Length: 155
Image (cartoon, rainbow, N blue to C red; front, side, top):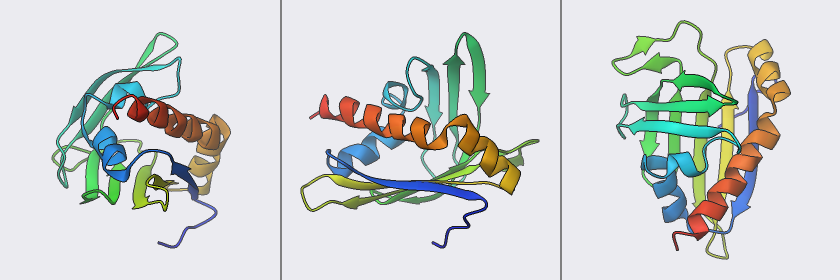
């Protein structure tokens, strides 16, 4: 995948948990509330239909404000890649104001961990800059840290 530095934000990190467990955490709705949004914010609901075109819907509580997030999966390679977007909701209904497409890849690290890459693709330079200004790197980095802490508790 070729990144466009004007519209794509991405980072790679090695996580000290096995790839299969990272995949499970990202694809099973009972796990998502434990890591998917930086604390102290919360995921209060998650509904997953894990198939291309299937829903990936979450509800966030951010400082008391409820945020509904609807999206669909665009690509699934079990254990290796998840691609989801808020550009559509289930049934391929276009979103009125989409924000991004997320691309997550997982590979085995030499020490038994996971090489984890998170990429956010945006429709415009302005949307990418907004996401960067919102704290993409710190926020998604915190999510990765929370994922590791949570997943280690499942081992």
